[in-house]
Length: 306
Image: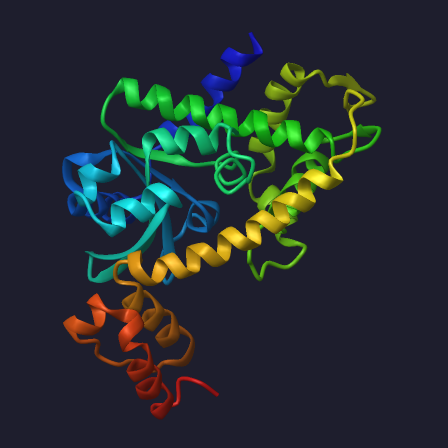
């Protein structure tokens, strides 16, 4: 059955081993949040490039509940109202620092967002892309995560079918929909970014397309595929772009209260690009918004901004 083949494909993909530095930062993230963590997903540019040195690893931590992580309070409420919350983390590995930016979301919210029940593509567009599952509590959790990832693939492919005309191939499908999803976020990504993402894992996307498109009514034609007739989704994507801009701004505001070690992350980014480094006090780490003017002035005095 095609559905079984998609599940097998995504199970095999997520079961692939990760490099030792990735395993180290995954374990550090797990240790920070303890028994509440049910799974950790590794995805993004470090996975595509096969290298994390000098970069920031992208992780998703799936947790049992927000109360299990934070107890009762503002962070738990904001994570529930507008998931995910974002954290920055560094861990030592063989004489260097491995850095990660990870998003924390409940397993239930991840299932809803990644499987396509969210109108906005924030999760389902990300997790139609290749990922790894370096930690999973048990087989039941793994099955739930893999099912959500299969939902991502089906959702993205289904949205892509409405963006292509006539006979199309795997590249046409994925690049079309990735271009649309990038436009729904406040990102400074160039138009060719969608092409780069596809080309980095073209064989993977071809396999997923061949597996999922028959489930969506597409048929093989002329060396490619023929989409079933359906209306063009112009209004839907316009609404997603407006929604995405509003959500992006809301998440930026929320990050001022929830982005743990956000000041350290920004200072590392500035040092990487300018070579300027300053020390951050414990108070400034806890209150990056209140400390921002002082930190900006120190960085300016040292020549971090031209």
